[in-house]
Image (cartoon, rainbow, N blue to C red; front, side, top):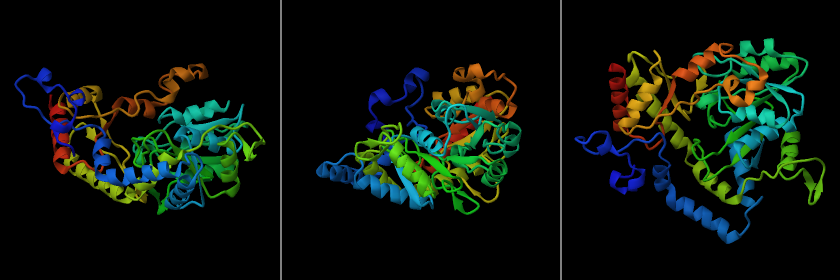
Length: 395
């Protein structure tokens, strides 16, 4: 962790303005990528320099190596690097036959990219409510929403916790639907001993900088065990080309570049260690929050492994926003992921959904608060966060 004096003044909290009599306290950001970089700076610089020396920046050996390494990490046969996690979702859906007029069932509570990827293809997202304990898609919500237009199910492993893939796959098999995993937040998580990413027809991974495995810009990957899907995505990501200058269908320009691939290969070597650190921090939070009235800690059903992309609690009693502000005043970062469920987003107003149709997601949107969690976090910082949380609730 960098010393407070090393943080540029423009990035520091103005504690004097908040309380002129208080001593400056080192802020605890929601995420500290600077601390991560300090720990691997030499490896990162060497990897980037290797790319600069090679002077191949698109579809080179770094990207090919990363595809194989991430696929192996996810226990899948194939990986295809693309420009972002959102692109990975769109390409996966397109490669499995989703197009204009089709419907795709998605959980109503997630980052907007999950639903927007469906919309971008001219298909319609059909929203389903979540489970209160996991924030993930409730499998019981699937079959009542299936119509003759339904083509796929797009479950999300939200916050790093696997969703109920057995029940989802069973519903999909009964109805002849394709399952695409939104694995943007859960690389490395396990569902009944199997890594997320290999539990459906294909999965989309995001390497957005804040992710557990984050690039230094936008990047993503599709993983799959189906050679046909991998081959089509390789074509679609490169203008639909099947050979140089020969395009069989409209595609995208969505190729993961060599510098991002090189950075991600370095970080992948550390991912297991970072994952264990996140899980240890979550265990510390769980211990310190036990018995704290007004806070519900994350729940992990038996047989699932959480990788804690976010450590998300519920703040009950309508106090979430007040707690968030209280923590901010004390230099502690926290974020509400996500304050507006899909059916209440302006982009989907034309679908005609009303407030009250998805009560579990709506309540989650009002209560969730993600506390700082990253490998470099210290036990003392976690204690300070929990003490401040307790103090906010005591007011």
